[in-house]
Image (cartoon, rainbow, N blue to C red; front, side, top):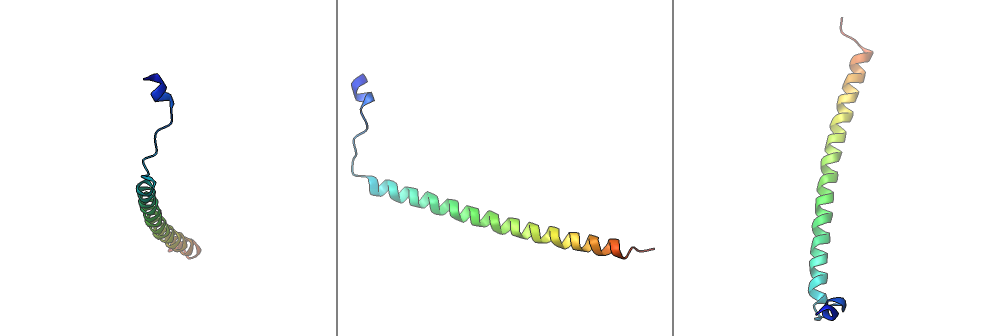
Length: 63
């Protein structure tokens, strides 16, 4: 029994199935990363707009 545990697993020619699963996982990760990037860009644009408005209000303070 110990000898069986120390030997590498037998290849069942299921590499194509494992490759497909790996490709699917990679695609999901890429879509998630793109979604996060889009969200961060929107947040960054909003922060830049707010900073510009604050900068303009500092240049021309209301009295």
